[in-house]
Length: 395
Ligand code: CTP
Ligand code: MG
Image (cartoon, rainbow, N blue to C red; front, side):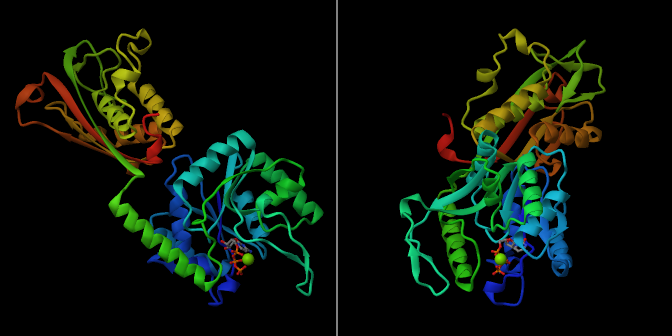
């Protein structure tokens, strides 16, 4: 995706690029980048910057742990900046989102909706119905026309496109000198239909000084609401036990562990992945693994549990949920697991399409107590935090 941040913020009148200003302590650009980096399917973020802002932006990204964002030098018009962003993107992407850094309040639901709609419509803009009646005027501010308000929508970002289509639109714009203040316009000029989906009146573009006050008020209201009712964040737990037996491989978090015993079970008996799947399903209000993958079903015999985890992830995606972080505890008296933990984190992260920092795995013994302590079995617990539209849970 591209975040356009190479403007000069002239209308703000501070002699400084407005998107670098703090909004309730966090720079506007950082708020925008974080909104997108939280979505696991956002593979790459390219930020357009002015040469003179480069160093400050780089430092900012480092400080906010967003060093994976790439920078592209923008141009004089927004359109030139986005063109530079497109050129800097990985050419193998299928879909591209373009967002103005100046809209830091964009909701995760709107981002997810744009991403889901673009796969159906190829070109999508987030927009809201216009509240004011709009006048078209001549150069002397005499009214020329009053378009029918019911047909007017104010376009916002993100806007989302098939990569091929937006590249074509920008190539034509370059050849034929088309000018536009948003990306959808260029696709419209190609004659390709552009679908609008509902944005939010809170997804304001910070343009003039009073917008900063409005944005701060929206954020303050949000944190008040959040402390009363954290509806968008959901958590789940999972627990599983399997018996150790001879003649089976020991597989934990998808990693083959060197040991003379393995776990008994219908699938590969990866007890840690089972606990994790239950935590994720629980967080999403989707029941448990027994419901989704019954062990009476021969399809699941001997199957790698990572395959099942992939399916659980797909079920969460379908409901618009994003994985925040997961934490696991594996209780095994033997063998020692510490040397495998990093590889386990990588495998789980890859399967859930999150970064390894979002996955934590702990191994413990039980001091010789109980079935784990006697080496009869291995137990695992998992906790998961996901975010998304809570009203969709369980449907
Ligand atoms: N933008 C950009 N390159 C430009 C101009 C704008 O990447 N040459 C970005 C801005 O940083 C902003 C977004 O496009 O995030 C929308 O533009 P706008 O709100 O107009 O921001 P500015 O151009 O910075 O503000 P102004 O027009 O008041 O100077
Ligand atoms: Mg501008």
